[in-house]
Image (cartoon, helix red, strand yellow):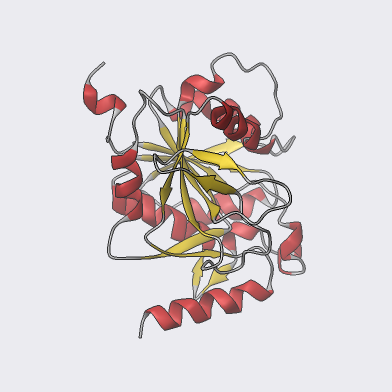
Length: 246
């Protein structure tokens, strides 16, 4: 295999998770799917897809379940990246199951994953380029973009990971506050799902398995992460955007 395929290459596909029910965002999600909620005038899903377009990602597989027609209609005219809808109308498959269903569209090379309830204010360095540059399939199964827990917006839990000097991630101890939070963006090997037979399952269990094997790594975000998980965090995120523009 060519070195470019194992280390430092920009993934050409992304799995974008847009199927969730958005229960924590009620009452806004009583009439609108969470990915279409606007922050500073832009729908959350567009913020995600625009980042991928700028990075040169060619294809984004978007799974849909809750109010799917609204999302499909919204994305109908987008050409960059190319949008492929993965239909989960009949059953919500969770993130792992969503990947398994769409794995043929995602291809046989490492791909991005991306949640649609968060985004970031870019620092001096492009974070997707840094994430791609940090990928090394020889030592990694998963590489996650992580951010500072105390300096992020909308983080109402005690973080997710610790990270050693080599960039390996470990799960937060239950009684501790972890310095790093998962941003919802990462690079994943498709091989991980080759022997998966379950239809519905989470993605986090793959993180913990990779961590246990010493093959879960982190790339620290350059900038500020904004998690829009509740209606009140929209104002917090918009205030952060306004400050960054000053």
